Image 1: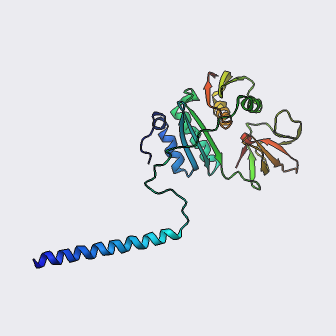
Image 2: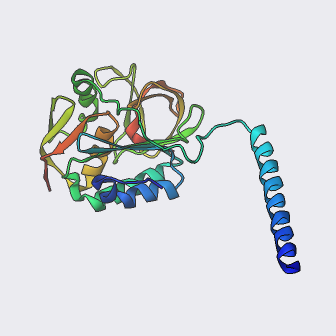
Image 3: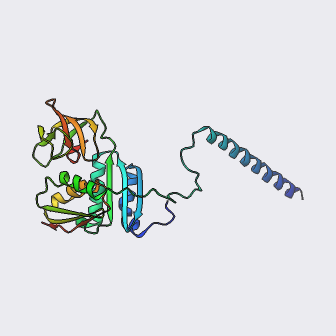
Length: 143
Length: 114
């Protein structure tokens, strides 16, 4: 498709092709100051994880410092239910969006929370199964 | 001569059909809202510049992102996140995933991976 692709686009071509074939929307691939920026919205958390596995295979342990992969999950929308995907511990529910904010509740590992609204890429306002409302770190929420 | 005339008539007929065909297509297309640029417009000729967070924004969001990674240190300079310390390989991808969403200019991974 692209008339000419850069050295970095060639290096990460498998990743770009996987994103396209997996239905990543609003896919943007940009070169800037010797770093490749890939942005897009994956249809599910599984697709996002798969793309990260491809990235890790092309650049083992992410050592090259030549790619910023910023993939959102488009199914993470207010009203949907997300699973608490911590390693094993409970997820802190905080009064505000920040780890400096007091903890007002906990959501158990693998339990479900309802997404209320997205504050930013890092924080979501959620409601736990017990009905507690507060802010949770987005990284630990999977849909 | 007869053959030539026949052939030219045939060609004219084919051409006319082709023209009518494209004419119809053009009309159909005109009804649809124009969403995509024309095929001959060079794509991504002037892509929007990549948004990079300020160092203060990065330092602030790193506090949250690194909370569950006690062995990891991060320094921020001109949009770049420089990682030092140690991490288990199984946790590295989780960390990188979080850091890539902070809109840094670059991530330099100098972590010792166990």
